[in-house]
Length: 516
Image (cartoon, rainbow, N blue to C red; front, side, top):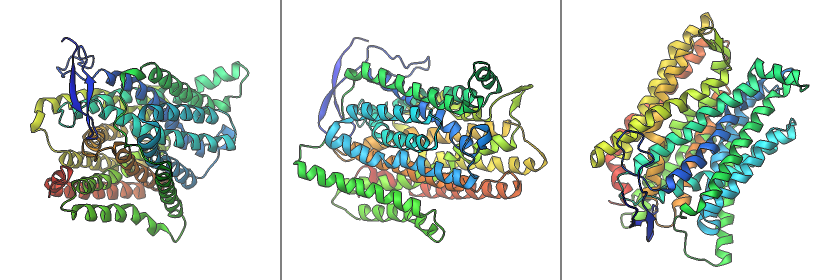
């Protein structure tokens, strides 16, 4: 198809902008997908390597913290490791709120991605240095950098499509598939470096301490992030920043920045305080505050933007519940794989962290099919709220599957097929919710608020991760019956959330359009 340019409305509903169309569909993948904007390829590979760094480190984090000091770990108790993991993972996404503000008001999305990515790389290299102080420094740098990086690269993807472009969900699904290539490769690489006896033997033969193998895995994650930033910088001219707010006075920007920063720190403080005995009730604020926002926005009959933000609140709660269960991949399920699963296939033993590659490989295999389905259905495809409900259904099924797996673990380590079945159902649910959520946020965000709305979207992931860490801290390999009951309770909670989402789907769809 000859190259051409056409007028499109930017993703956040601002003024029309020129968006270049590609010469051909490099994303076709033999599935008959329509062409996508050229800049998607640059963002695809940038996010691929950023996810390599994140999931490569995540696959090791809890295992490193609970490993005995004599084996090069930190020797933390499981509850402490779960709490630290949850707080870190929450901070990673919570800081997307100030990150979105900084992009919208000061730096723009492209520069925010560059600065954020460089900070993430420094964090991974800090983790590569074996010291408790550099461990916490590395986690802090990764959280700060991701706050700048994560919402803004998604905003750049949304800026490639007009609001009514039926390719939008398919484009985000393909983007999602691409980043999962990095997520698939990362645990294989970092897990081999950190856990395999083969690599430890090589280290010993070369005169290095094999107990420090964990830090070689963290260093590999840093290399992945460095590659990500080089690719983004080389391809930055193919991208356009989403519309930013009109110029404001310095005092106004400073005042708003202080409010956003204080608000973010207050949320983090509430989350930390909720871990203290006697303050667990504070976790209910994660649900109550969005509900109050929904009620306020839904009653503003003459304010379409407020009604759209009410819809954002509904998606927020659904996503928070989803991620609270899903993100136990880094806590409960990681420990289940290490302590209760036979980590071998046909006589070949493998590191327990390799199970972290199951979800992304399923995404790679299934995302093109889901994207092709949305393209095929076009305007007949289910609404975003219905897709969210379907995502929750599959997640409930995944944890229901783990109930008998936990029961059988009382008689010894169970087959790896149980976890593979869980990750298959996990993935189908994820593809119904996560890329659709990103697409929906960039579509319904009020004008010049795309970065901040995406920050709110990632705040749901932040709260979900915090809850996942707290739940994972209660893991015990010595009581399979209690573990089975925990899996059953979580499956039931998610199933109830799915039923509610289906029930209110028509209302949420109207709110998304700013209608009464």
